[in-house]
Length: 98
Image 1: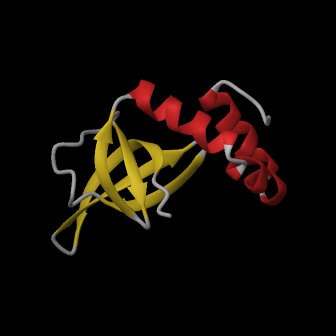
Image 2: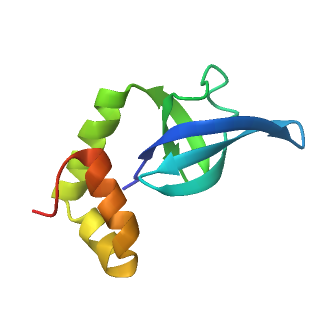
Image 3: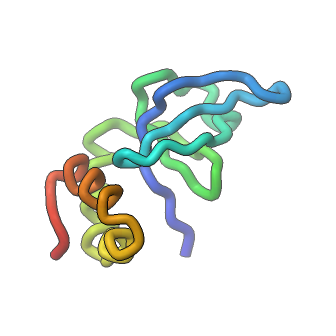
């Protein structure tokens, strides 16, 4: 099973002739390759899989995905490892562990 995580694009730059973005995942910021979504802009939500933004999604879809992840227990595992990050994800998703 592949899991894509939604994140909000904070900035886009170019590195080694590839568009790279700083993307926030509920308080955690990572650099991801934006080559597959050249239409994405700062402020957009993207679905990220293994370091690559693979599609642009709207904010409502991002919220729904956070809820699905929460339902399958993925966020509770993250809470054990990084409680502050989990709280940020709860704030974004609007819920807590089930």
